[in-house]
Length: 309
Image (tube, rainbow, N blue to C red; front, side, top):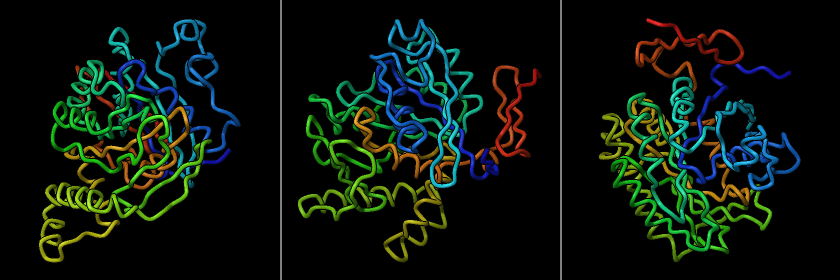
C-alpha cells in the first residue's frame, strides 16, 4: 500500500445543497484517477458514496462518506456530506476535520438555501473554501448569474479561476484564467486538450486574469508591491498568494465543471494538490463548542482526535 507524507495528503469536504452534485463529483474524481473503471450514478444507486439501502432508496446522501483518490503523487481524502439541513450535524462533523471545503452550486438554479446555511458554518470554522459551479451541461445553466449570486451572498472575495465557453447542452470547453488556456473535452470527458484561448474570448479572459491578480495581491503586501512595480505576477506567485489567502479565509477560488460528464474534475484535483493547504500548513487546532481538535501529523496520513475541554 502506497504511503504519503503529510504534505502530500489533502483532506477535503464536499458541501452543497441537495442535488448540487457532490456525490457525482466524488465519483468523477475517483474515476478520473483510475481507481474505478466506470462512474456510478445516484439514480442507479451504484455510487461509492451513497451505499446504504436508505440512501439508494431516497436517491440522496444521509450520512457523510469517507472516500479517497490519488492525483499526481498526492492522496486526497474526500468527505461527501448530505445536502439537506436535517443532516447538518454530518456537515459540522466533517468541517471539523477538513483542511479545505468545496461548496458546489447548481448552475441551473444558482445559490440555494442549503449553500447559505453551510457557508455560515464554514465562516465559523474559517475553513479554506473553493466554489464549484456544477451542471454546466444543463440546458438552463447560467454561469454568470450563479457567479454573481455567489459574490452577492458570500462576498467579493469569491474570485473566478474558470468560466465556461459554451454552457448548456453542448458544454465541453472551459477557459482557465490562472493558466490562461482553454480546456476542450471530448464527449466522454476525461483529460482535455489544452488549446489557446480563442480570439473572441481574449479580452474577457485577460480582464478576469487581471481581476484575479488584483484579488490575490490585495491580500499580500509583498505581492502588491511587486504587482505595482511590474504590472504582473507569475503563475507560481499567484498560486502561493492564493494558498496564503485561502488559509486566512480571505479568498475563495471558483471553478466550473460538469461532474456527470467528467469534465473538470482533474483540474480541480490538480489545484487541490498544488494550492490547497495540507494539514500541517493549517493552524494547529480549532476550538468549537467546547471541543479541541488535535491534529497528529506524524504518520503517513493525518489523524484527527477530539478532546472535550
